[in-house]
Image 1: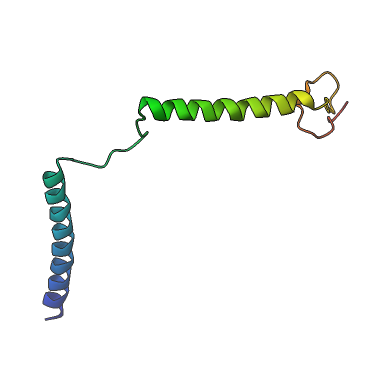
Image 2: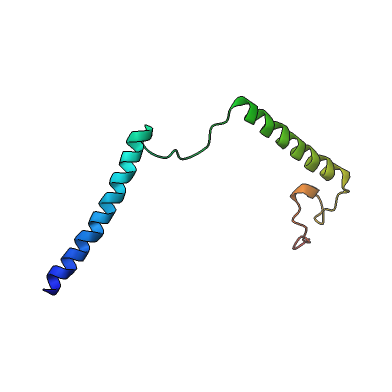
Length: 91
């Protein structure tokens, strides 16, 4: 009898999973979508323009702040933007 009880529990669990899948498929059929889109969200032109403006401001502020700082390179002959901020080993 224990075997039947375990088998029935397994079948009920499988039935619940199938009911969930059926509900999802019925919702997809009702809405006309098959699966949720994955990957990048497409943007309309206005959104693209706003992101472009925002990024230009961000890059501009970072670039001007970097140009305003004096070079603090600790490695001889290495540009400041490539320096790790630590003294060179063996120099």
